[in-house]
Every structure is written in structure tokens, then in C-alpha cells.
Image (cartoon, rainbow, N blue to C red; front, top):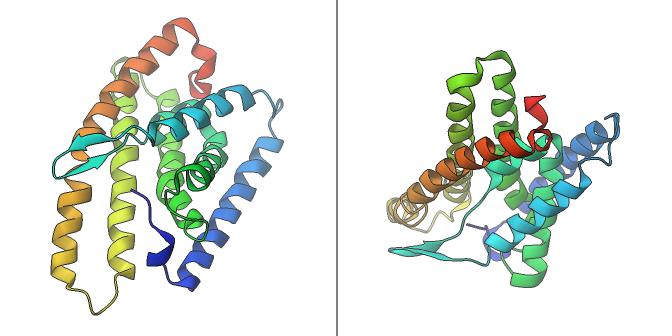
Length: 213
């Protein structure tokens, strides 16, 4: 689920790069202001590597194949570190697997990174809610919500930049079938996985989840 370079008008690609640069600056500035800004680097590197690796594992979901996103669980664990982590992971995918492209890197970073940031904020709400059952509910929502928000952004953006001479109804129907429908099982899997992972980390390493402090 990457927007390729050849599909993007130049001005759209440059706009995406500008917005991504702004979010990177915001994230890095917030990280710099933390009491220990380097403390999150090890887990950020680990999850960036995981995000990069899962893109190479294709799951056959007829009539297409997909891969896990992990942006929801990354948002939970990394918090403000998540957008730089997503950007680095996508850059590695471009350079090594040719997924997407350098011009479209900004747009793809927004598609994956903005939902990750939103899921980090959503999980942060548990600080004001009872421990049970909200930790489970929010974990599942973040895992599934990260996927579906990315799918929604990809779907909407692709329709927005589709050339006028293409059959809009056909494009919309095919996108729904190949992207939205196919990622339903992925959203479910990532929701369950996120619940199990958060419960496990709370028992053995709660400091890995910043918002549980």
C-alpha cells in the first residue's frame, strides 16, 4: 500500500514532502525537549527495523496480497518518536525494495505516520480512564485503527489524484476491493496482536509503554 512516484503530480509530491518535513521537525523538537531524549532510541530502532521487515512478508488475501503495517502498535510504544521511525522505515523500503519512491516518500509517510501519531494520542487517553477494561479496548482500537486510517488515507488520496480520463467508478470499485476490503483481516489481526502485546509488556516491561507511567 505505497503510492508510486509515477502516479504523483510533481506539486503533490513536493507538498507531501513539505508536510512531512514539518511533522519531522515538530517530532524531533518535542523529542529534544524531553528530559532524556536519547532514552527512546533503542526501542525506536527496534520497531523501525520491525516495520521495515514486515513489508517484505506478503500475505495472500484474494484477490491481492498485503503486508502488516504495525503503525498502531508503533504509536503506542514509541509515542512522539513514531513519525521519525515511520519515515526512516519507509526510506529504507524505497532504497532496498523500491516500494513507493523518493518523490512519494512524503505522501507515504503521511499515510502511515499520521495515523500512528493519532493512535499514540488515542492510547494516551487511558491515563484518565479505569485500567480495566479500557487498556484492552484502547489497545485493540489502536491496532486496528492505525491500519484502517492508513487505508482510508490511501483510498481517498488515490481517488483525489486519479487522472480525469480514467473511469472514476471503476477505479473506486477496484480500490475498494483491492485495498479496503483486503485490509479488513489485517486490521483485525493487528488489533488482536496489539492487545496481546500490550498486556504482555505491562506484565514484564511496563516502561516500554510511555503512557502507562
